[in-house]
Image (cartoon, rainbow over all chains, first blue to last red; front, side, top):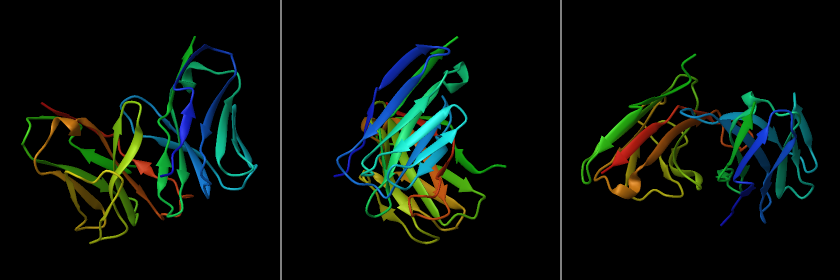
Length: 110
Length: 114
């Protein structure tokens, strides 16, 4: 059974600080996606990484796919209250079905 | 842009009652999915469909049935609701199933079984 572990489960920091969220597995994924979910809404895709070692930037968010395609990280620089939400990673397994992490709940305090 | 629409948004059922959750998408997507989201467990796939008239089991299919009679609609049924089915249910759709395609989600149905 393929599993994706996210850490930390919960993070509360002040506006302006930097943070990193991790997504780890013992399995290899063909691709990995990061979603953000706000209360009362469904997840919304932020980015898809496909190649081992790939780095993608989305404004203040930097996403990296591990060289072995088993792990990924999301780094936020100078966090803002608008970054508050639940961040979910999802890896595409051997049958292309998504395996979801449990999520990191992020709160950015003004 | 409607995207994926789920109805109802909230529902309270008694144990043993039945109900159907409705999902409609207007993006002409082939693939549709039903997930449940529980605290600390992420999204778990219940059933999915790769096209009109087809359905397949996901990770946690027991106690649920689905139908995809029209390409734009995917229905999730609970024949005899149990308290363990209390959850938030999300429908999603995608153009392909290759894992690189984004899944587009509805806003969820919050279901409580008493």
